[in-house]
Image (spheres, protein in one colour):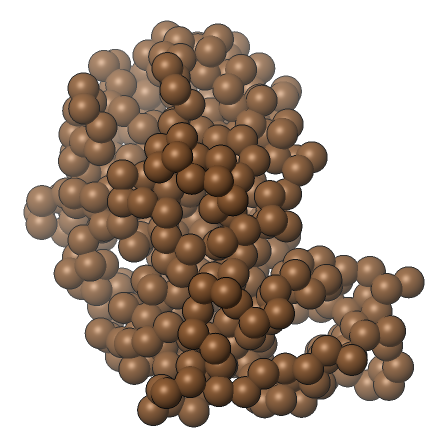
Length: 380
Ligand SMILES: [Zn+2]
């Protein structure tokens, strides 16, 4: 039985908004899962001396556009998922495999695309990252039977990426999916691709999807009155991304904090896209939000881990017994005035990724993409 003990932690950032920090100094992992926090088990096959670093859940990128494996045709890049692992990302959620060249526009083609992507990523983790793919893009010709087909093929998510001509059908597609347990996302704001239309706040109120994808714009946000409308008049999940408008992201974070509604927020990158491939995009968005507001860094980490997992019903995103050991050891980067990872984020800087574990296995030993940490954990 594979076992790992992580000792000498500076602190644990849990990923849980209700209780974002724990002072426990050790964690025990068996067969890829967290078995004990503040462990009393004294032996393990692998012992990691954390050397005072901060343990967090691996980041869960709420908004990605995978295609197959580690290839993205949008930026002709290979191996991008592994690069994100080096930015602390252990899981990703697909917001649709929309970058396939000559993407089909009809129900049969879009269902086939989702089933192919899900099947492929369920069997293959590029770079070790858990890619939750196979998100059904909705089209005007879809019926309840198509949603049932997708459900029977184990599709768990769907997305309105382009404004459907028939808003009433869009509303029903979302409801038919909800009846079967599918989570629905809807593109929010200005059109992102030539030949497509804007999606307005009024459409959100009519269609009622679960998640306003890239609420701060992908890349163009709703006009201010639309932002106000969805924050104040709905309970929708609001997603903040690195590829959008950061003035809006900061404003939405402050307003939802003041309303006591941080549980509605989640963080993603919305990459690869026209915005590019951004391996440290999750850390970058966290450093912007923590650096420019008074929301604490551990709470911001929860928006990028536990909140995403809860909204998408993923069994990860928390440092909690029974969860998969998808974890990061983070520190203050060399040269920073901060003394630890959360201090660096609150100062508006990247935290340094020293180790990344997926299912208890150390996959990253000193990130090739973040600055080095002031001190490093040692694996024995
Ligand atoms: Zn997107």
